Length: 169
Image (tube, rainbow, N blue to C red; front, side):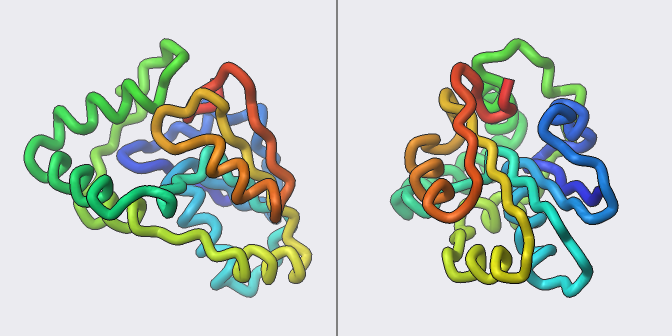
């Protein structure tokens, strides 16, 4: 399986073992990594049977001012921004995400925040035979879970996991 890490994280795939299917024809990604996994599969002609999107970063419903503010605060104080980000990502669990910390770049955060999920590209992948599964935590403090669920559930197999947040626990 090919796996793509979330923003400012590395090695966190162990947290999602119950959702992952480890075959050579599976691709998965968490949050920012879900965006990267999707683009990898879309732009690659290699066989992929299953694409697993774990808490895909979904900000296309946010105002531009929200995105600019996020980028501004990250540039001003990365440590403080990351601390708040990790607290929001782990909620409501008590998992120590610092064990997986790998501070991202301004460019990565910008890519994550400005990314637009394209319905036509999703439908094209499905037409190519890719089974897309999306997992969303109902109590996610990073993205708007209801808007994300509404978007993906109209296109893919989508699971809304009650009482879990961004890291799906």
